[in-house]
Amino acid sequence: MPSPGTGNKGIDSGSRARPGWEGCRLFSNPKPAALLSSTEGFHPGWIAILDGKRVPTVKVNFVFRGVYALTPGNHRLVWEFRPRSLFQGLAVSSSGFLLLFA
Image (cartoon, rainbow, N blue to C red; front, side, top):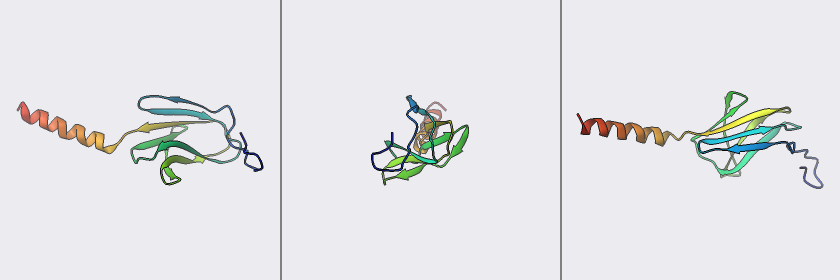
């Protein structure tokens, strides 16, 4: 909804999100070009996929995450959390497991 006293048209009220354990899917229909932001914390492990193409994730207000790429029209944004440390830990744990039983 637009804020009182501003010319901002905002994102259509038809926006909806589906959170999941691995991330979130958002369906949106912004009227003007828009920055979509989330109140969840920024981490370099977050990956944004807009309409099937990976787009850069930006830091909003120093701590939150967002995407600049929303143009007018219907969009599907998927947030996935893939921290590099998870894959590094998996590699170290797998190596240790193999050495233990070698």
